[in-house]
Image (cartoon, rainbow, N blue to C red; front, side, top):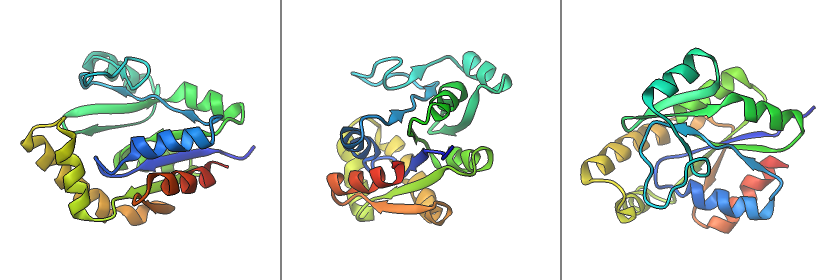
Length: 181
């Protein structure tokens, strides 16, 4: 069975969600994994749709029981991919897409070496700064932390199998779909 597991990573604010939504319209049979997180929901986010919002204690239990394919701490919160749904979809030959951070991508590379790792880059650093500041969802301090992390992630882009520049959402989505097929 061919593995149809694609991991999409990239710095905060690069447009991962926009590219994914466009890719899912092009290839609706793709299953987008829903991560578990210890962070609080943002306005409009729905438990079980955007994330599974869990307590730190529940997250610790998921780790200790081996129920996460990968997990990472980012901006003071933890995020992880529940293992069982990913394995079930792959066994059914359904293309699976994970949107995860660099730490998680490295863990997936070890546990599922056939996964295709794709890194989404901004057209420029200034563009990334503008996007993050323009979201209005984080404090200036949180934006500064995210930018510092983004620089580290951009420096690690060579770890990934492929890189897509998000200068046009539709074009980037079509490129992402090509890896899912």
